[in-house]
Length: 290
Image (cartoon, helix red, strand yellow):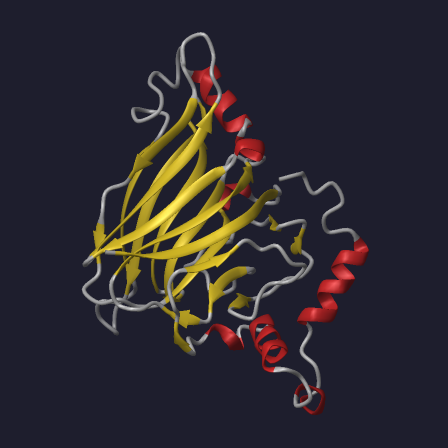
């Protein structure tokens, strides 16, 4: 999809404010049910699941506002816009993650999923400007109760690399802090590339450089009590690497019962500090798997 050359311009931000700022109660009574859902989503009130979602579900984000199925938790209209067939999001401050109750612009469906296996897929592009970006996709019942995929750019050691993680956070005892279990893998240290800190360093940089254009397809899946994730990437070719479409899957984590709402968000780790990250989300879908 074409770049957002003028995204977040003042007029677009003003239009979003008109959509997302709650109106007086008397005015809300005259709104359609769809508009009421959008208003509730703007302040997080729409985040409580209202019904079971019918599958398949697909949203190509092809309008100029989010559909009524979506709730934007801690909506900050200065940092996202729905335009040109996608959601353009910027993030700064290094505090955006599903475990932070104050994180802004977490996009959640206002429905629970039916019982059974599924594949949840998010497509988009990512501009790894800080070297500490995260794309989150999964299920969330609250800041201390979520299970999600995490496509992460992390900079340490000899430079930036791309990681595929899956994280399970839940409260096991009401008197204790949430417990987090996770698996993660450096995709540039085995699955997609070897010798990242020596001969592979230049190719790792090239692979990260195409993410704003070639993008990613991140899938979060349930099979019984097991949850796992996979990512598809278009890698550039060079004299040593054939490039093309590559897919990598993660280990699995378990939950006994289905829970939570589908969600996704652009995140940042704390080391991003005041650096700015951006992403475009252009397609979301959930399909039942037999």
